[in-house]
Amino acid sequence: MTQLTILRYPDSRLHTVAKPVAAVDARIQRLVSDMFETMYEAAGIGLAASQVDVHERLVVIDVSEKRDEPLVLINPEITWASEETRLGEEGCLSVPGIYDGVERSIAIKLKALGLDGQLQTLEVEGMLAVCIQHEMDHLIGKVFVEYLSPLKRNRIKTKLIKQKKDEERDGER
Ligand code: NI
Image (tube, rainbow, N blue to C red; front, side, top):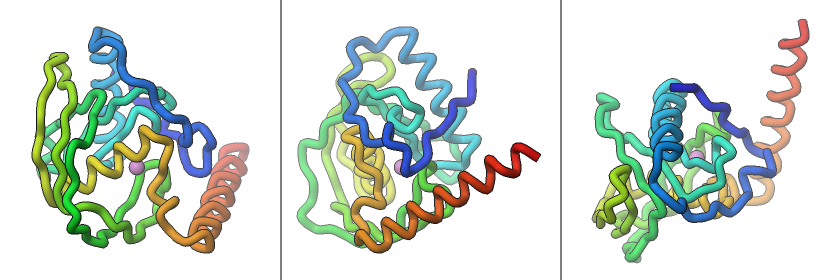
């Protein structure tokens, strides 16, 4: 397994719209295991392929406490979303250190292929439902900070650009 590099906002590649996965083959299986390794190492609960610069409709998720309930969603499609929404705090491995409120449906139904290539239907709520909506946004090139006000978003952008410059400068020493 290989740890992958996670793109960081405001990297323009994060705004690429992903294409469907054409076949659940050995390449996809390798990608999924690398993505899980990358996500667990970064202590995240979800990672979209878009975040590791692979623009195909694929996400990995594990919202369990023990980090032992891996979920793979290939070509996911939301078929129903509750009208009832809730404002919850979100973070993102591509936007390190930033947490802010996003309004999401509290329950969703979806269909997706599993790693075995079989179509599965899911009905989920709570943190898992929020996480799936967040990750699926990545697949259409949307990062959660885009739900925030332009003012907040610009502050985050400035902060992350500065953070990256500082890291690069420290790396040169
Ligand atoms: Ni994210």
